[in-house]
Length: 194
Ligand code: FNR
Image (cartoon, rainbow, N blue to C red; front, side, top):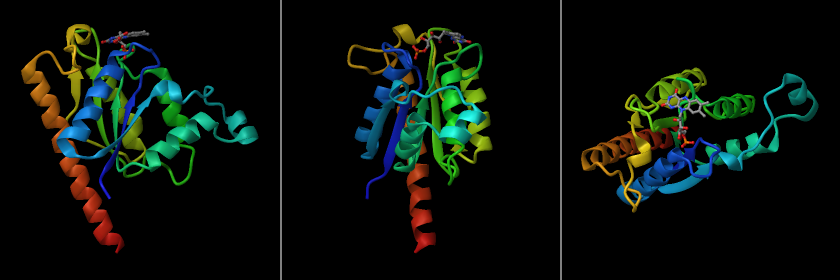
């Protein structure tokens, strides 16, 4: 079966720069690597703030279970996340917290590539370093290379490519080298399970 990748735009905003970056990454995953893509937007997974009492009374909410299902159906995960106040957005952290309550724990051994887009000069890179912490804690294999698009409000062409060709090439390189690792890892896991 072909590799399957969940590409999640982690902003709730309709006109999100990260949704645009996620759409570009989804296209690269499909065209450059021939993998299947499940392209998701954070507003598909609405859920209340994590509350331990609510979890005991009602269990993990449907929005978090839906995200878990989409995650479990994929060999790898790409998150395009905004940076809020030099960290990850609360909504994304909340979703990770809820999903982490499911067993088997869905992030364990999941290969993940982190990218970000921001109108600022740092491109949201500090948010990605913050996002690594819960993901790595949960056993996700977060790819060492991360991609952050600075001045993202002027960073895209009308076709949805990156306006600066050097940067575009670097994104292609990040995505393809990540997918090569995922493919090798998937093959290895298949061999071991035989
Ligand atoms: C921001 N923004 C922002 N940008 C950044 O580069 N570093 C930061 O620390 C912050 N902090 C921040 C806090 C809050 C509460 C908001 C609402 C915004 C700006 C942010 O990058 C910008 O709104 C992006 O457009 C958000 O991503 P989406 O929604 O376009 O994907």
